[in-house]
Length: 130
Image 1 (spheres, rainbow, N blue to C red):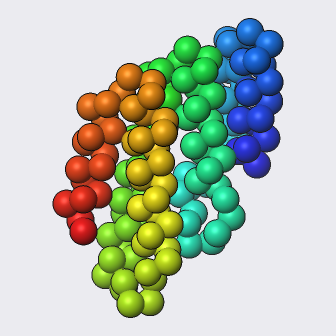
Image 2 (tube, rainbow, N blue to C red):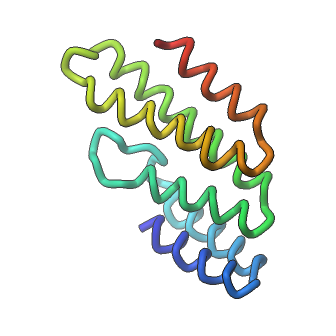
C-alpha cells in the first residue's frame, strides 16, 4: 500500500504541489507504521515502494525526510542481509536482492540528490559485511 501514497505524491509533485506531496508521503508512513519497511523475504515489492517514497520526498524538496527514510530502510535491510549471510547457502537470492536495494538507494537515490556521503556510508556498511 505504500506505493499508492508514492504514486499520488509523484502526481502532486508533477503538478507543483510539493507540500501536498510531502504531506501525502508523511500520511503513508503514518498509516503503514506498524509494518516493516523491508520485506525482501516475502517478495512483495515493498522495498521498491519505500524507494519510490524516498524519491518523491526528494522531488518535494524534503531531503531530510528522504535521508531519514533511506537510513531507516537500509538499517532494516542490513539486519536481513546479516541473517541471509549466515544462511547464504539457502538464502543467496534474498541476500543478493537486499544488497541490490542497498546499491540502488545509494547510487540512484542518494547520490544524484547530493547525499554522496550518506551513500558512501551505506555502501561501506554493506561491503564490510561481504
